[in-house]
Amino acid sequence: MVWDLPTRIFHWAFVVSIAGAYISGERGALGVHELFSLLALGLIMFRLIWGVVGYETARFSHFLTTPAHILAYARSVMARKSSPHIGHNPLGGLAVIALLLVMGAMAVTGLWTGDDILYEAPLPILGIAPDLAAPMGSWHQDIHKWVIPLIALHVLAILAHRLWLGEKLVGRMISGGSAAEKPSRRQTWFGLALLTICVGASLSLALVTPNFI
Image (tube, rainbow, N blue to C red; front, side, top):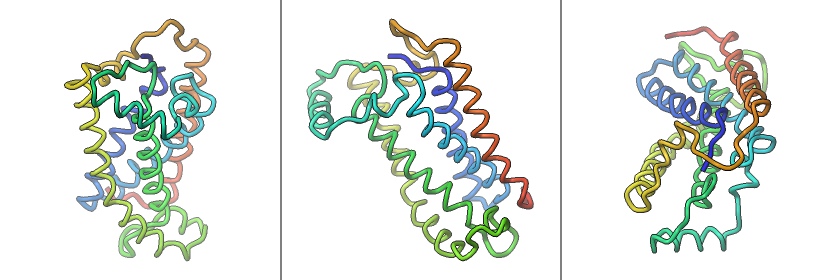
């Protein structure tokens, strides 16, 4: 199993962004919530692009498969006969897509979501579809209910791999793992540059809103 450096940075930064956005949102610290949410949005933008042009194990084509393969893998896990994958396994691939979809929907709807008192979201300020503020705010709250269950499922899956299958997924996401063919230096630097551009572009939206930290 091998994870390239841009993917590893994305992963841990995504963890920080989700935790930060959730905690700050629950406490009403909307300025901080905005920054963490924009960070998450930039990271998601990067991951979507990297899933097409990135290192082999990061590409969606590498781990998205048919329902038959997913079912077969699930059966092998139950029987403790599954073999380690060089990247995401079929079930892990589904988890990646689920997290990107839910957190992406949270981040996008949040671009229109304000509290009508102290905080106004960046896109209405810029005059971009201000009429969407009300429905987007409602959807933002509805999607919010899926965040904790998805995270809990993700953590349980990691524990299951460690305790049931003996796979140290967390350690590999830190060290990068090992494989016969690792990412080239050029590919790594390209990924880091892309990550920086996506996050920087997303965070720049915070410049148009008052920051109530």
